Length: 448
Image 1 (cartoon, rainbow, N blue to C red):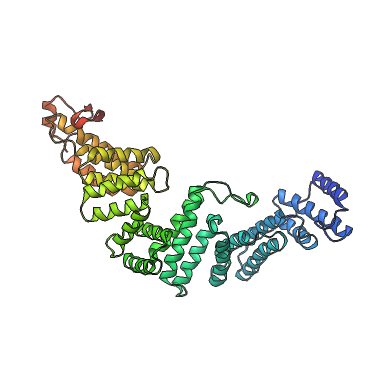
Image 2: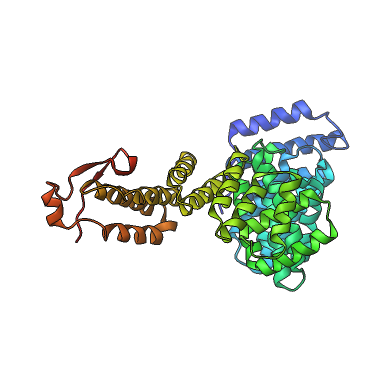
């Protein structure tokens, strides 16, 4: 690689800095000579970093961290950046291992000079999992110390990495399902606390890792790992054990119920006692949703709808509001309360305009309203429902199959061409739907 040359302006700045700070001691070194060397090294490495000449910056970084380790926190961030740059370019496994250790040493040096131990260990653990994932026990110890120390102040990356390495240990027979559940409850508690609080990161110069999107990604990754490990029988057994051991731990019970709700483990013997206990102690959207789920599985849609509406009302701005609204809409649809179903679905669309499940609910409500109308008005709801199913299919690939089935069912109820012609209707013509109390425009379609 051709060595880049420092600009004259950069060199002049370095010399001015040296002259100005040559007498500084302590932070810039133990002696006046150290101060001169320190400031020179800092200035030169910073100039090379500006040019992205990371290889050229490295010797000056080493100089600064050796001569004046407490002079700048940023130089440790830059040292880590340089090591990651080298790791990305290096192909030799042995050299990669050495570079990884040098990266981890940069974190240790930062801790020695500037503290923030649990915070920095979180960052270190994330990189350890990326570059040396085979060192699972060491990574686990590093991230555990970070998460145990920071709790709900933990960043999204260390939380997700901690659960990932625990999963890796489980895969190797070095962790149990019970550990996976208990740590899932704890870590998800920290994730959700941060999702409710979208404030910035504690250490801004390290880059943001505290926004809601980061924690949503962490939550999704953690959920995916946990649900690969535990089925409802496992969860139900562990829940029963924990309830027996900690009968008065209301916070634990709430988290256990959330897990069972997420997996819809409503048929486990421990489910109903848990949901009732949580709801009696402190009615919440989660406990109301749990009881609604249970009653829906028992085919008591009227009773279920009551609790689902309560879940929505108790969750004015919680992170699971869309989930509660969708389930309330589905239960209302099953109960024949199509107006309520559409209302819940419209509330979902206000938050997620491309939510296919909500569009399908509206289509279902419209299609169900066709009875009681005469021709040609009776055809309108099927045409309009078809529109909603088609829109769901185009916007949300996850519901494509379901939407296609509903579209086919609607198409089977389209009028034959002769019937449409009798009412002076032709395919592609605009049609105002009034049957069922709707007032929307759709397109005339005939059976093929």
